[in-house]
Image 1 (cartoon, rainbow, N blue to C red):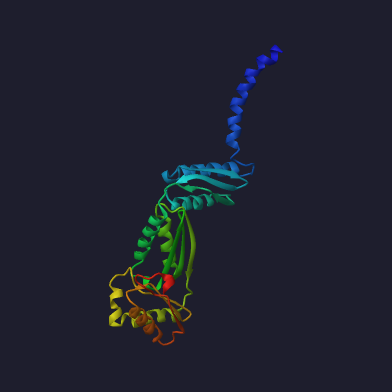
Image 2: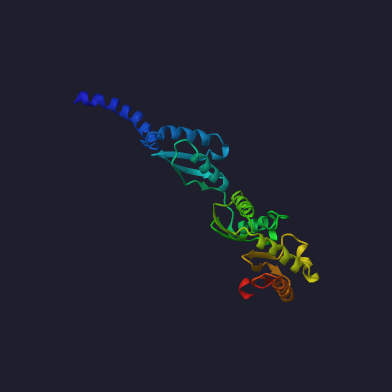
Length: 257
C-alpha cells in the first residue's frame, strides 16, 4: 500500500506533462501530411499581424481556421493563403470579424462608396443593390462587365463592419449589339435639354441596363415629366426591343412608382 502511495506523485507528474501534449496534438490529425500542414499553416498565420488572432487545426489534410480579424477581407485572404499550402485538401473558415457597425450606418457608408466606384467607367450602365443584415451584406443588381462586379465586391469586403458578403450580382452577357444600344440610349436620354442635369453629378445618373436588346431604366428623377421623357427617349432608339421604366420620382417610394 505504501509502495502505491509513493508511486502516486510520480504518476501525477507524468500526467501533468503528457496530458498537455495530448491536448496540443488533438488539433493535428493522424493523416500523413497533417503535422507538416499544421506547422506551415501556423507559420503563415503568424507571419502577418492581421492574422495573429487566427488559429488553425488540421485533420486529414483539412484545415479549420478559428479566431477573429478586424476586416472581412483579412478572413478571406487567410483562407485563400492556407488553401494554397502543399497537400491541403480544403479549408473550413470559421474566423469571425470582430469590428461592428450598426446596419443602417453600414448601409449608408457602402451606398456612398459604391456610388462613386468606377466613375468614368460606364457606371450609368450598372445598377447595384445592397442589403445589410447583422453585418452580412448582400450585393445584387446588374452590371455590364466583370470589372464592375469585382470592384464593387472588393470595396465591400474591405469596409470595416462587414462580417460576410453574399454575391448576387448579375454580369450581363458580352454583346457588341448591347454595347451599341447602351451608348445610343444614353445619348438619346441625355441629349434632351431637360435631362442634361442628370449628367452633372456622376453619382446620380439614370441607370441604363441593357440585356439582349431589352432596356431597363433605374434611378431617381425629379418629376413625373422627367420620368416620361427618359422612357420616351429610350423607346425612340432603333432596335430597342422593350423598355422597362423603373425610375422613381424623388420623394416617392419604389413601391409607389
